[in-house]
Length: 435
Ligand SMILES: Cc1cc2nc3c(=O)[nH]c(=O)nc-3n(C[C@H](O)[C@H](O)[C@H](O)COP(=O)(O)OP(=O)(O)OC[C@H]3O[C@@H](n4cnc5c(N)ncnc54)[C@H](O)[C@@H]3O)c2cc1C
Image (cartoon, rainbow, N blue to C red):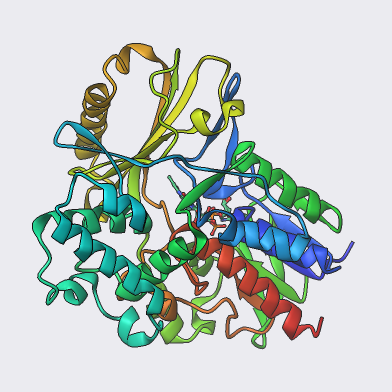
C-alpha cells in the first residue's frame, strides 16, 4: 500500500496532524516507536481503575482552547470538557483562594485595595495588546520594572506566570508577549483551564479513530532515518527497509528530528535555532489514594517552591475507583538540576513532606505513587529567546519534509504549541498539495 503522508511520532503532534489530513482524504501512516500512543501526553489505565495521564494535563482556555477548537472546526465534534473549580493557593502554611480572574482578584485577602487595582490593571491591559516582536522580545521583568508594584502584587504575578508558562520564577527570561497573549486568551475564554471528560485517553482514542478511517498506525516501530535526495524527501528507513512517500512529517522534538536527517542538507540557521530550543523540565508525582483526602476540584498551587497539582478524580470520577482518589503534582525545575539524582531525590522527599502539611494524613492514605523526573515537560520554553517567531517553521527547507509538535512555530504556550503546530503543519501540507 502507498501513503500520501508518512508521520514519524504518535504524540499529539503526529496524531492531530494525522487526523486532520486523514479527515481531508489523504492516506496517512504513523510510526510510533513505543507500544503506546500519546507521547508526553499518554494516558492509560496505570493501576486497576486508575486512568493516569503523564503528569498533570489541563486544556488551556477551556472550550476556546486549541484542542476543543480543532475538534469543533476540523471534525465538527464537540469535546466534552469539565471546567476546573476554584483555584487554591497554599502559601506560608495557609490556604487561600487563587485569584485567577478579575472578579476573584477583587475578593482576595492576599492583596490590599491598591494592590488589587494594580494587578487588575496589569491583567486587563492584556486585552488591548497588539502582539509584535517588540513585545515578544521583552522580558516580563523589564516590562514590569517601571510599574512600581508591591511585593505582594509581584508574588501573585509570579505565581500566575509560573502556572501559565510552567516555569519556576523566571520572569527575567519569559516573553511578555507570550504571557500577555495567554492572559488575553484566558480572559476571553472566561476560564483558565479544563479537563477532557474521560481523561486525555478519550482524546487520543478519538484521534486514532479518525486516522484509522483513512490510514494506519504502527506502534513499536522506530524510524531510523529520513531519506533525502536532491533536496526532496524519498521515504523513511525502518529496520533496513525503505518505505517511500512524497511527504513526511517529523512529529518529534526538533533535536530528535535532527538525529534522523543528514544535517549537512540543512541550513545553518535552522541548526542554530534547534540548538537554541530549550525544553521545560520538572518532577511529576501521581498518587492513588485509598480514600477521599480532599474535595478541592480546582488547580492547586504552592509558592516557594512553585508547584501545581490537582485531584483529577474530583473533576472526573471515572479516572479513579469508587471512593478512591487520583492526585497529581508537578514541580517545574531548572534544566541544571534535572540530571542530578541527589537533588531530585531531595525534591521528591520535600514534596511528600509538603503534601502532608497541605493535607494532614495524606501520606497514610497513599496506595501507590509514581514519581517521574522529566527532562522534557514542554518541548519549548516561551522565553524572549524561544518565543513563536524564534522557533523552527513547520515547513522545512527540504521539499516534502514538515515538522509538527511542541518545539516548532505554532503559537501558544506549552502543549498548545504542539496542538497549534500540528494544525499549522496539516494546513501547510494541504495548501502545498492544493487540497
Ligand atoms: C508533566 C507534563 C505536563 C504537561 N501539562 C500539559 C498541560 O497541562 N496542557 C498541555 O496542553 N500540555 C501539557 N504538557 C505538554 C504536552 O504533553 C506536550 O506538549 C505534547 O504532548 C507534545 O507532543 P509532541 O507530539 O510534540 O511530542 P511527543 O509527545 O514527545 O511525541 C513524540 C512521539 O514520537 C515518538 N518518537 C520519537 N522518535 C521516534 C522515532 N525515531 N520513530 C518513531 N517514533 C518516535 C515518541 O515515542 C513520542 O511518542 C505537559 C507535558 C508534561 C510532560
